Length: 114
Length: 114
Image (cartoon, rainbow over all chains, first blue to last red):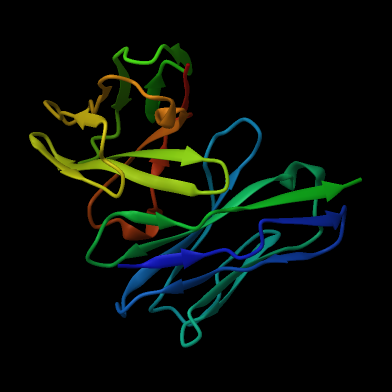
């Protein structure tokens, strides 16, 4: 079974600075997908960014980028130019190629300070 | 396009009562899921369905039941509610073969059992 580990329960960053959220996972599969979801106080789950394991290039979505290290099974999220609206809980998630179910980490609470 | 609709948004139940959490999607997604979110624990899969008439247990199915009579609807039934079922419940859906797109989530139901 796959596992997703987010070892930092919370982080804080100054507005306009850069922050990196860590995530590691364990799987025996070679083809899979990784995701970061954002959950603001509204409770809605919002997809931030996704990465296909077969792609070597790290995914980027505006201020959000990932550092995908397949051999190390690491998938960190970098948020540049942090904004107050980035304050939320962030979940790392794994989805196997032959298995449609998402496995989530425990999440990390990010606070952006003005 | 409504996406995934969950009702109710909030509910308080007394111990031993029963209720059904409703979930409907209008995207013609075959796959549907129920997760529960507890503080510091991430999201845990309760039940899932890969199509009408097909359901299967996830990681934490005890105390719950599901049915899938149509592609659109995937209700979650709580029988004999217990305080341990106090949680936030999320319904989600996805289309098979679209692993890169993660899930579409509903807005959640906050359930309190007293």
